[in-house]
Length: 499
Image (cartoon, rainbow, N blue to C red; front, side):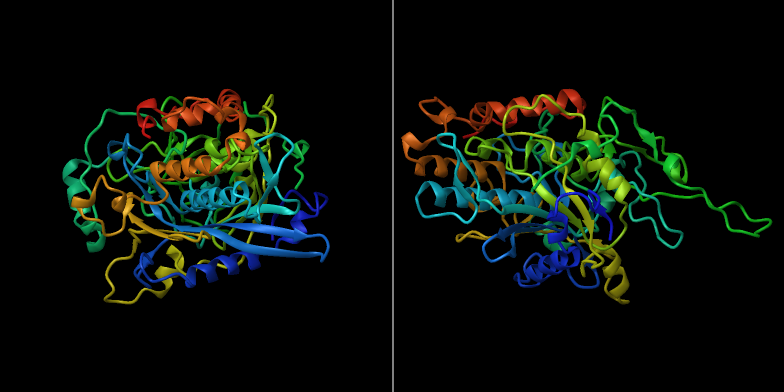
């Protein structure tokens, strides 16, 4: 199976069996209740998970535990975004899994500051700061190649196009017709959007994909300044031999539904392999309206520099948290595209503050395909089941003692009524407001003398205030923006002033 970095890199690669990781994640999914899962043979979904890896030197053993798991394929449009932080913007599996992991980390920090002992954190040298226990690391699993740049890969002749072509927005009449085909349970919880002024959001950059140890920076050869390349430059054109009178076969690439961010180059949209540019930031498309969620390829690349803990938890941590390994399940995959999307684009970032660094993950692929993938669903589809469609619900499970399961649709709790909107009953446990409240409970549980320095005596009120208090994180973010991701949409402050 393909591996990045190569075999001469640190021994962490040898600790990870990609098939074992995939099996653990699929088994964890099977153990979850039925609610929110796809209907076999008719609906499909995507799965992602975060695993805690614990290497015990004394016994020379390695423990692997799924601590967060997510499913989902959808995002909300920009007009539905909430300035109160009550809606879950991005419900792609990768984002769900990462946000569930943040819930888990808050719980572990709560245990640490309360003196109960944490399996993850121990006190760091800096006052009020924590770090990972020796031997603890985190691994990211995704059942599929992440949407966006990593998904632009050459197709085999026998493969069908997994994504619909990127087209212009449908007319309102077309969208109404398309809307009639939605699942009934999705319609029951659907919330009518309130139109808001167009605003941009990069912090979590959340929205919808339609139907769909030690690092060595010397291994990273390309510069962040390299211009985007058409996919055709890396795809060999093939034509059937001895086929007089037939048109030459045009090589093709897997297409991503994610669209280039505004202000930069647009995809050429040429037939076959010339359809996409590569190396660009992309936003996930919505149903008939633009979204402000960056692709999962872009988010994974960002987490490789800023860490996956986010701005708030960086206040408590001496060093950012990085995924040591990314494992992709069976299906279309390209080591070159994954390296380009997750590693190369940020390889030149420098001058990062203490606690942050460019930490590209090791890349592996499993041979095991997710049983509820689109391909497996099509394989087991039977006549009379109706058309195949993506599952409308998103599932989050994380290893916390209270309310580990969170099932959502359209950014709110699955099955919520209109009457409940604006109440805690309607909110996902992963939305910004709920995660912020969980963080505030952590702050309240910390003895004043043990608080991180930025939180001592500071007059902080809103989500925005606390994020800005994480100065090192914000400095690292500015370096990443200026050196690699200049076109990443900026968060509108008006969406972050809740408390």
